[in-house]
Image (cartoon, rainbow, N blue to C red; front, side, top):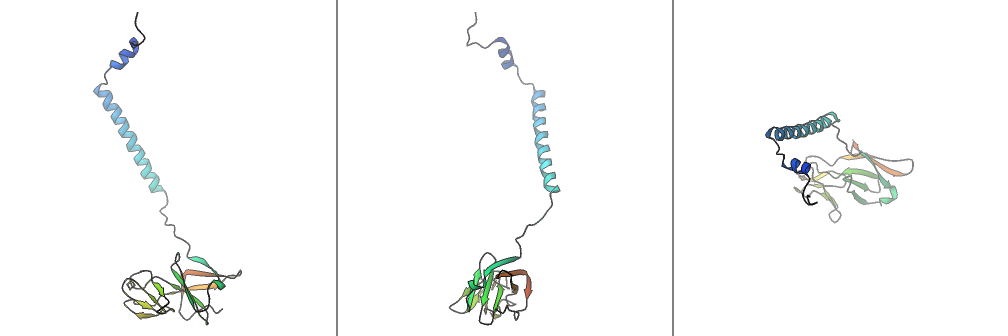
Length: 166
Ligand code: FES
């Protein structure tokens, strides 16, 4: 009588059956084809999806007029825009240096906007005081909405003399 620890005759025969070279290569080829098929499907899906670049909107709400006291320069970091308010009115100014695109910084103690990269300096209306910046900082269109908020459109540049009279 056989003990329970010994494998049964059928299990024994399955365990001892060697994998033939042909079976091994058939399995290997099947796996390789499956991997290649998955890769080809991924590339096809990637190719068939539209190649669209999603950019943030160019118009943004900059808060209420009262957020900007007279004779102030406020840097809106996530938009890289200055809101400048004087007794004459208000304007929105790009904070991107016209030399090589560094982000400028408002220096209240010097009453100027300075570029940390190559030393350009701008007046608060954007005019170049010191180069190498070749042009003034551009002004963006700014308007008051019906509910009293400021709205800046970074796609629409305006001449520096155009300010929002408030
Ligand atoms: S990038 Fe501003 S001075 Fe060069």
